[in-house]
Amino acid sequence: MSSPVKLPGQHYLNAAYGIKSWLLTTDHKRIAWLYLASITLFFFVGGFFAVLIRLELMTPQGDLVEAETYNKLFTMHGLFMIFFFLIPSIPAVLGNFLVPMMIGAPDLAFPRLNLASWYIYIAGATLALVAAVTGGVDTGWTFYTPYSSIYSNTNVVLAALGIFITGFSSILTGINFIVTIHKMRAPGLTWFRLPLFIWAHYATSIIMVLGTPVLAVTIVLVAIERIFRIGFFDPALGGDPVLFQHLFWFYSHPAVYIMILPGMGVISELVTCFSRKRIFGYSFVAFSSLAIAVVGFLVWGHHMFVSSQSVYASMIFSILSFVVAVPSAIKVFNWTATLYKGSISLQTPMLYALGFIGLFTIGGMTGLALAALGLDVHVHDTYFVVAHFHYIMVGGMVMAYLGGLHFWWPKMTGRMYPEWWGRLSALIIFVGFNLAFFPQFLLGYLGMPRRYHAYPEEFQVLNVMSSAGASILGIGYLIPMIYFIWSMRYGAQAGPNPWQAKGLEWQTPSPPPTENFPITPVVTEDAYAYSQEEAAVV
Image 1 (tube, rainbow, N blue to C red):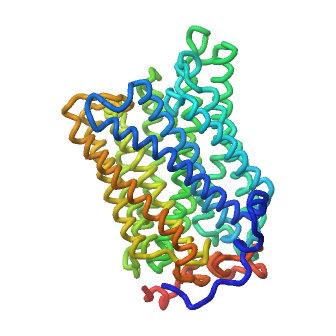
Image 2 (cartoon, one colour; image 1 turned 180 degrees about the vertical axis):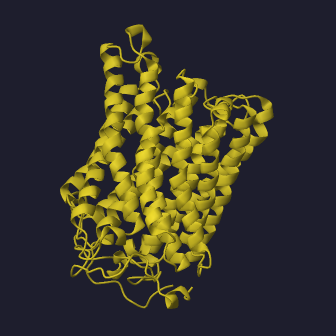
Image 3 (cartoon, one colour; image 1 turned 180 degrees about the horizontal axis):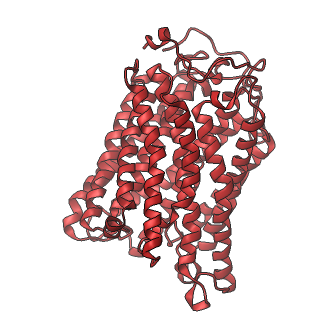
């Protein structure tokens, strides 16, 4: 896979030196690296809390920490993983690096706004980190009221302020992507020649821009009620706690698609490249992204089947939740059809893509179970929900993120990672993940509630299995960290297109120059136009 082509003499990584050149850069590729470093940091912060959670649950009585401390551990784990890793990771890292190059543009439409988005993200994450180290938050990442607005004595306002500020980073990034995709496409790059990665980010950006302000307003209302005792959600002050759930889930369910849609875009790129085939049903895959973005705004009520909402409302939300599964299923079916009779190459990115399809399918099917009224009432707030969520987010989005990172790592650095270690870590992550989270489906079905620090002894075996799997998963995550850093100095030189892939980003040197392309490219063919001869090359 290595190429005899040497690294280009001048590229974006050596265009300027010094910390100042990075902290003040407006190059979208360098900003992607800033996000990569900071998001990785917060991933391990969230992972640290997960380690403590699993250690606590090794024994039925929870001998590690008190109940109050456990409440803070799962809250901080959720806050850091969701708001500072899962939501921004693929758009901010891979999207920032690739969107301009994939459409043949020299940068995003608003480069300074792009840098400002990173600083806003850092400011919000720092406040949340301060909240964590100065006492933590115990409300759960959902901040359900009136507990968060009235009763909790922890750092609710500081953590909520961090999330409120970070939301502006998400909104500005979404606006930047939408304008860039509309206005800066290369000549000949029509909407239906766009890579599916771009379609996915376009749909995601719409959710970011329309949904995030709702969360921001909700957090402001919580702060007003907590500080000034003006009732919005507290019944004692004339408020309604169910109103908070409506507002929170109106954003937070679409936020699931902010996390998973970009991952689906990555998988579309990986499946077609390592199958050497055009994607099956391009238009269906593209429009299914938009369909998910639109219908995703209509299903928030399925989180509230036990909140006292009317049975008729629950029936409608149940039906809509089944409807939103249709475009997701379209993607899975089209990826599978693309694989059929393809020249499949099991390189590391493809292993992650196959892992994504399998784990996301399990997560999606169990999501349908949760969309069914009767079954949801039985497993509501149990470990079944925890397992479902992690199969979608960790088994889905994180697998896509790692697959994408391996796929475009040669483009980002000009060097290859060690393939054998890549495949090994992908296997370890897949095994560790399933051992960690599949037992939680059983725990939930048997009735173990989530967010409890102690449990009956009959649940210990499954909890120990889950903790053992989490340990294996953690090792799997550490291995790529090590060989990615190693490869930046010692990895084989990649050349411009080590995978023989299609797409404009592969037509420029690796690493690319600051302006991305020496001359503006002209697009003359559809996306993924693999010829029959190329399809025969594995």
